[in-house]
Image 1 (cartoon, rainbow, N blue to C red):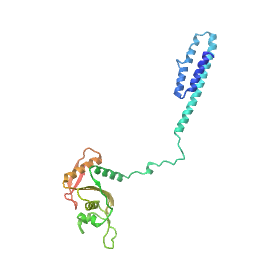
Image 2: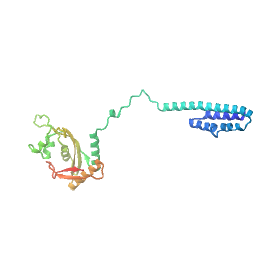
Image 3: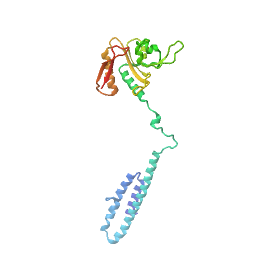
Image 4: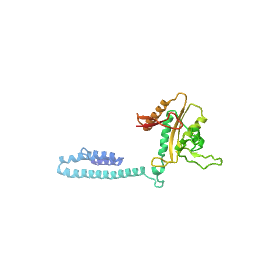
Length: 268
């Protein structure tokens, strides 16, 4: 076997062994590139006699064509193999059920998210979460909170009452979460440090009110607490809830039947 035939066979073997297009390109450059082995043979034709050039040129060009055809054939095989591998890796089982859209899977309600965040902030400040029934007695909702029968402050609450029982008493939908404070004070001894989040109900419906809304009340009972502690708690809560480093707060005197002193808060 001549040196040219050996070179051609060597190149064809390298083409057949190329495992990907990058390896195949390296074989092509080594054989047919500017400094490739077959290109080097072609450059020697100019130094040959006309008869040698005719004979050797035909042989070298035939070897070049064979290598070029082998490269093209191997490239097609490698491209097909790469496509098959990609299709296998990206196969979709059409028999599987359709994935539910996020809207169909459901999400936590915004009110639930807010209550969870509020509870977490107060829990970090040492408060416990206290809960009570939405359907209350007149005694817990009013009387034990300094709202005796006939007290004008009861008119502020526009209460949902149930039908009267045989004894004349009527249950009601709580107008605030304050009954939870009463229940806590009757069952626990100080010190007490709780918040009472929950739904409340009043016969009130307009552009800024709904018959059912939410409240979060807090209760602290110990021998050392004072109004300054309340102001600090509200300030720290607002900073945490609104995720800011500072917040401007204003405390205004106000009236509530069962707290003294009573304040309302403005924030900026």
